[in-house]
Amino acid sequence: MAEEKTKLTRDGTMQVTAKEGIGYLESSGKETLLVMSGLKDPEPEPPAKKTKLAKGTTMVGTAKEADRLLGDNRPDADAMTRGQQKQIDAISKEAPSTPKKAKLAKAGTMVATAKEGTELLGKEKLGDTRQETKRKAPAAKPAMKKTTTMEKTIAEAAWTVPDINVEEGRKTRSQASGAAKPAIKRDGTMQKTAKEGKAFVKAGKKSKK
Image (cartoon, rainbow, N blue to C red):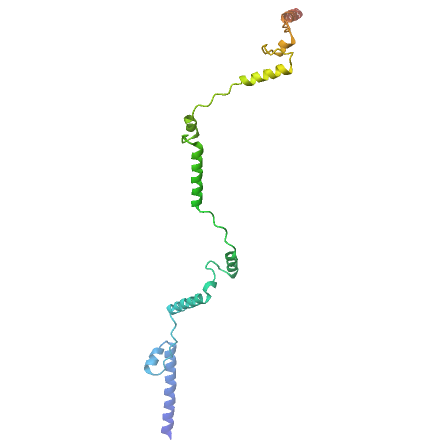
């Protein structure tokens, strides 16, 4: 009986010592050594993470599928929000403005204008500037004589006022009113003023003495 008790006590002591040793190794970060010694089961490996490449491929596939489903109803690339998308849709639905006339039509109009100008000018040569054109232009026609008009006016005056002698030369108002008035002589006035001035000066000198 005594031998059995001693063996039991020894076994319990060894188990306690083994547990203490395992705890010490775990606290020291020697778990790998315990696993290699068979004193501890290895921990299960975590599931492998999916690579970013696989995630990117999935997103591309999703985008293609969405594009196929939307068709012509896909949102505009410039629209950042739903409100912007609505505005873009409203603008797209507006009636397109009438296209401007092509430059070809404008060129045709210019050609027609040039032809019309050539027909009007005829053989007249134009210079690069207006001054050169004036130099090249023929001499201007002389002014029309007014003799005919004056004769006609005189005839009408003779018929309207028969007392006027249209054969006489033209007279001024002074000639028509009569003899010219003689010019006023200012010599006497000026001489009188000079005498008065001298007398005033002499009187001033006498008073000072």
